[in-house]
Length: 138
Image (tube, rainbow, N blue to C red; front, top):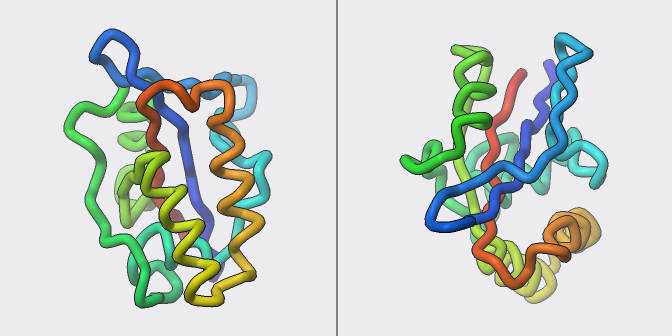
């Protein structure tokens, strides 16, 4: 059985987290999530972003759950997955940048390109507080 990620970018505007994905509800099973950066089914990346999802590295980020101040849009999407969504977590843009450096140091090169694409997906918001909120399904 395969595992996939549902990842959404948020930025903080006026002390409120806002989802910056473009939502298209025309497809029942395909709502807006960060699929265009090539992170789908990248199990090594999954294990880095959330310890014990498909694999574990000594630099993996521990699972945190959804942030308490999550945007309403992403909370609603998470709720719609009910028990089919698991290992909910998030990471900040600063943590993604640090993880990118750690990947090079620890020679986990297969995910370097995916991490670069994730970082670059925030480029137009890099002067704001940013985070990636995600969970997985099987």
